[in-house]
Image 1 (cartoon, helix red, strand yellow):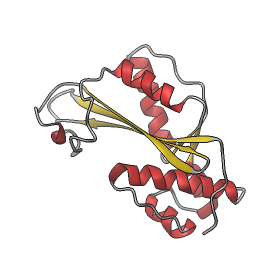
Image 2: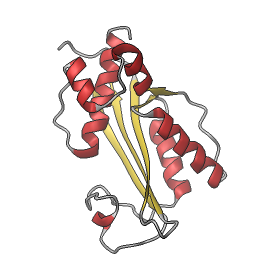
Image 3: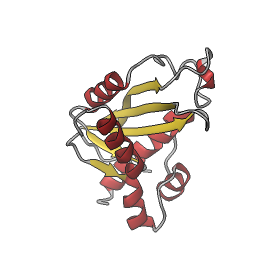
Length: 172
C-alpha cells in the first residue's frame, strides 16, 4: 500500500448517545475524535457526558473502561466546546455523518449552543458512491488494504481517517 495523501490536518469524529435504561430518561453522550496531521494520528479526544449517575463504576457506562471515561462529570456545554476546539483548524470527517450531525444538532438545540458551521465529510456516502456499500472498518480494510495497531473505538477512528486519506490520494 502506498503512503496516504497528505492533508494539513484531519479530525475523525464519532458522537454516540446511549440510553442507560428504558425506564429512565438518562443517557450518556460520548464524544470521540482522532486528529491526523500529515497522514499520522497525533492526538485523541474523549469526553463522556452522563445524564444521571447510575453507577459508581465508570466501566458500567456503555462498557467503556476507566481509561476511556476519565471525565464522566463533564457537562454537555463543556464537552461540546472542547470538541469544537479540538477540531479547530482541521477538516472534519465522520464515518457515519448522518447520525453524528443529528446528534450535534440535537445537542445544540437542547443546550442552546450554536450549530458548527464547518462541513463534516460523510465517509459513509463516499463509500456508497465508490464501492456500492456503506462504510465500515471491515469494508475499508478489505477495499483499501488498511491496517492499524489501535484497539477498541480508537481502531475504528484510525481506520476511518486512513480510509479517507487513501481515498483523497486516489482522487475519490
